[in-house]
Length: 268
Image (cartoon, rainbow, N blue to C red; front, side):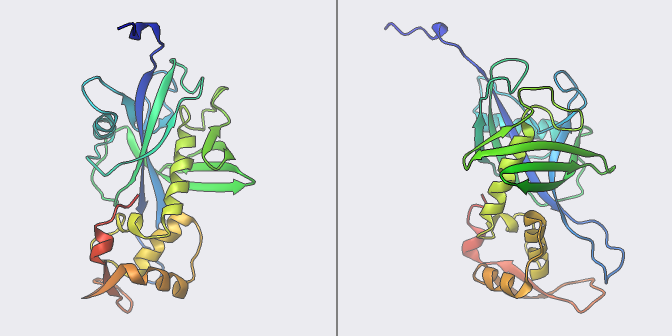
């Protein structure tokens, strides 16, 4: 056998994870319900490169585990979030994407229901806003103190995203590495997945009102939907229960649940 693996360059491989949720704050009154917002889970880096900048949770793969196992382990270690379902988003290998060397990232994404469970001290939810103009995207992430982190990402073709700052110094009010690119890619996939409501169901309790479901859609799509059209669209995927919304200061709404076929379907 003539093959010698040492004759070939071997990159390091990392796993990064985009985790979305929809958060809803306290309402000021029963007549003015707070607006749910789409949020992404980030961690504050504690070492070079990009020390003190927000980044996606992730890390380097070990020989003893698969890339998927690395993703789940790093997510748990760095944020406290344990074992959500993951879907492969993309592989990024652009030269210069990581100043430490030749590092290929396998990026995963998922959606989870929001809870008040404590996160790791360096992890935090950031509100997501995405603006688009002629294939160029501006990603704005806002932490709970109101500080904004802004990244410019452009779309070269339908399958490939390039972070404009990947080959230059990344601004301090942006994200580490090319993680803005990953978040934009994941959000576009999440939006396209809403042709069917499987991902949205992951963001809701077992029983929900149709208004709850519509608000999840609106938070992800960042636009207001016409109620009648929305309810007609999701009617094949939900069924009415015998329950009504509890604790409402207004006329209580009926509670629905996902149909069995929808409950068993993959959200991503």
